[in-house]
Image (spheres, rainbow, N blue to C red):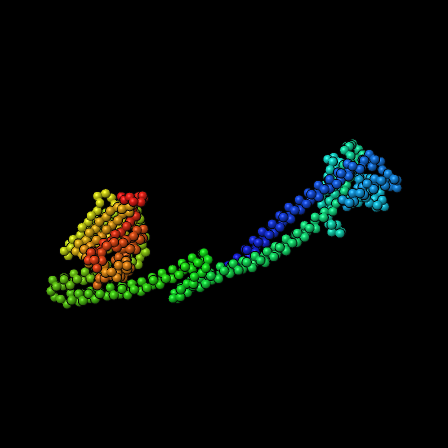
Length: 485
């Protein structure tokens, strides 16, 4: 099932469920409240009639055949006044004899129990009214005319003879449950409202789903296009919070892939170029060594072969370091040790060429959260770059504001102005030899360890040598603003 259909289905189901539950709760609450109000009115009407105009002792003396006597007609006239308020009214004894009704005497005679009250002989409302004083029946119906009724029961007089049911009288009134029709109308309206709400919810859900699935489908097609290598067309910017961020993220991904592809193409070309030169030298020196008959000359050629192999290994190592993902083990340790190891590797090379390398490290441990091998590689690359640029190189270290800072400075001509902003990009160099990956590797390694590297001073125009500063995370929290370690 598509996301759009799922969205519509959930939205419609939720709206129907809410309207159905709300309508049912309102229906039951209203029905119960109206039924309680009808019960109260039944008891009030029956109680007022029983207390004011009727006497149990007088009514209990009625016997069959007295329907034509003036006393019976007078009591029946009193009872029929209740017809303004109720549907029917009866006076019955506890032993289920009819004493008086609002019906015609041809329909119900004295001692004949009204057929409408037959259900209450079983449920015991008459007995409960005699014992407790009042009672109300459940809702009965629908009858043939579709109406519902309720009955109210009130004991006539306050006297109660538990030993002789024939001496206890109960007034019974029947009232139609007229609230049922409005409730039925309300239920039908609620059902119709649920249907309308479902239709409206479906339309709203369809519109909202379209605004979501449409951009998602477009972004899906963009992802397929990128996967197939067609990355020239920019990603269309979508509106909305999450979709907008997703489209912008995909555009950045597209640009990043293009940039990465360009770097890979440039790197492959650079690899071929950088490896071709040592291979050409290897071929030349190996051929000369094989043809030479002088042992000393042959050893010289073999030494040159070794030098070319060393250069070739260094080039390959640089490319692998640049291409391989870094997984630093950033533990807090004293980085003076890897700095010293890197300096020792370059110091002998500089001494042979007449250069000088100075190391200035603090007496106390210089703690940083960085991979020891990565620190060594960073310092080694910077010091070798500096040694190629000038004859004097200074390497220092200090703790500043919770960071461990490594300084590498040379006395060379500096960085050309047109390269200052691009000096850390791969394959950017002002040297005739080298792949231009040294500083790019430094930047990636330092950032992988959570630090940063900066070119702080030195330009070709000023004639001042270059100075690089590497900042590693230290083992202390940053001090307050304005204070330094």
